[in-house]
Length: 203
Image 1 (cartoon, helix red, strand yellow):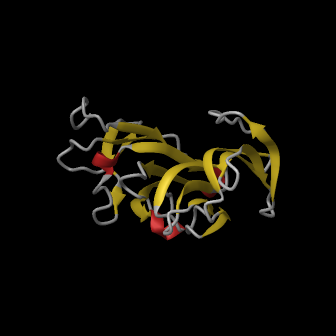
Image 2 (cartoon, one colour; image 1 turned 120 degrees about the vertical axis):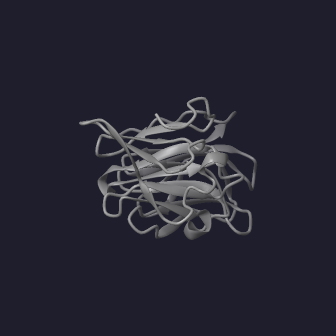
Image 3 (spheres, one colour; image 1 turned 90 degrees about the vertical axis):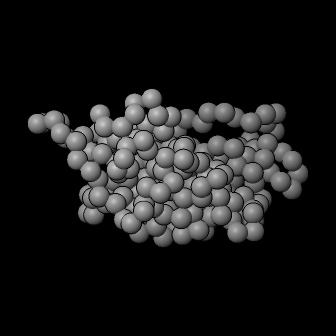
């Protein structure tokens, strides 16, 4: 492999075509590398100008795959670098950096994905806690939770509904809620004593 294998930001991920991709900020040419299997060779993944600028410094939280849309993004540590990276798009085969502001966020806290959408939790320009649902093909988005009503701890997808665990800000209750496909919100539990650390989706 090119680059220093001991570098703290070495990353591998598998994309939807089954191949491995590789990034190491210590490379003299800091581009994502595509590992072709047969015959084995390493090729540069093309990128928009300066797209990998912060990739070696920011650290990453999650790789989100929207399988039905054939897209993958890599979330940066949104507290310091409010951005994410489109690392798989078979239409362009080009790395693209996307600022959090494009999807209505000032900072990114965390995110999950379904087979069709990305869901990002963060804060908006007024520093209110916000949840947005993002279309992977063009990054249009809709806001599902806003105005800082909930400090969201965790998310899961269950039968096309979004299950969230959060601190409800108006009364300090730790709640488990559900957002239906029509964006209506209902409470599943309003008497939790502590944050839920893992939510498992049911399909």
